[in-house]
Image (cartoon, rainbow, N blue to C red; front, side):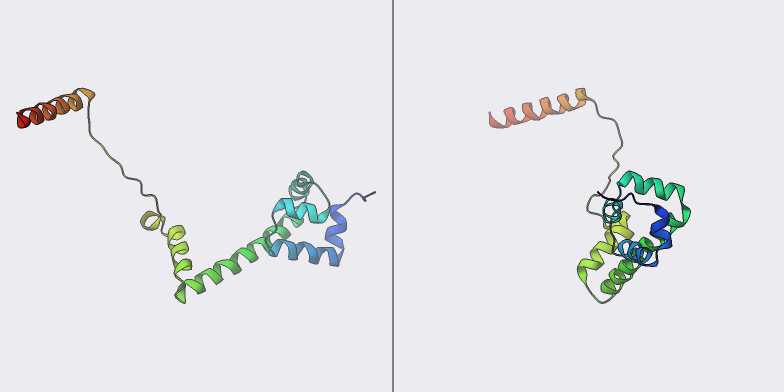
Length: 130
């Protein structure tokens, strides 16, 4: 039978604390963190809500990992890695580099105008073929 986990055990045990930091730095999701600790994801969220030290520990180490990846991406882009450059530009300069561009069209058009033009075009074609 599994023992019930307590947040204090994870914050007061140096080994467990090191594990938590490492898992967060390795980019584990909250679901994965919960599984490694041996608790439900709901319990993990409860621990984070009730204990700022725990929440900050996870956040700080996740932020560290994200910053390391950002720095590596930036370095790769500066060294000429075109994939990194494209990724960077699509995310940082969305207005100019994203694949999908939003184009705003304005003006009025009515179905009557469309039908009239279609009739005129049809008549013109019929007259040309005579």
